[in-house]
Length: 269
Ligand code: ARG
Image 1: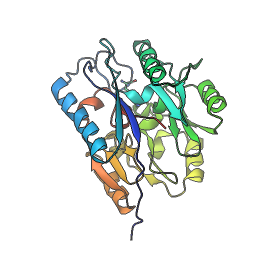
Image 2: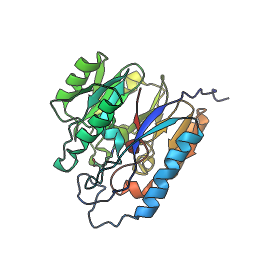
Image 3: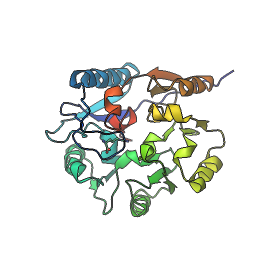
Image 4: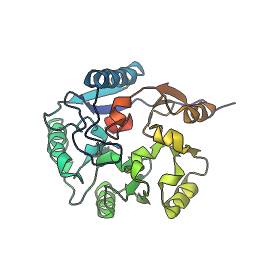
């Protein structure tokens, strides 16, 4: 019989997709000729927030800014562990102005914000496991930022190299299930990084390419429920077999910008 999983209440920071659009292409999912259904996007995002609240999680909002269509992807703007806020420095010039708006939100909420000196895209690439940070590099966040994050948090940072441009952020290829385990798509990583993940997580739940391409790894787990793209069917059943409860939330309009559930969700710890 599958184990009983215990959820932990989370605090999330999100940004309404009021100005969401695909206006430039900074990852292989984006095509500026794609039409985004703005109303549907808004509905899908509202359903995500509703699902978080229905399961007891707290959701804080930050005001969106005109001209910053990717600002909805809150995960990219900071990493917060133990009340320490490590800010962002975006790779793409189009996204750089987002950082100061997020910094201001944190400062207003009473936090100090660390300004990094090298490119780093928040929880997109720095993933807190409960004991250390797994850190992606290869497309966006630099190794120098991994070093900075380790110095800032005083927690070990484990660098992992991403090799497939469709999985350009670590959170597109891996998510944390709970304090013990993770779920990931092995082929998104260099062979050495794959070996590292295999040693750290011998019992990890692995995803197929189809499920990874369906945004199944851009999920949010509270330790019991996994908020997951409904298209990632095989993965959802693998998770259910392990005692997790998949909560399907469809963010298909956001996939057009190269984002999903986790991208829209920053966790404040
Ligand atoms: N269009 C955004 C970009 O390419 C999408 C960000 C997705 N966020 C994430 N955490 N993976 O930067």
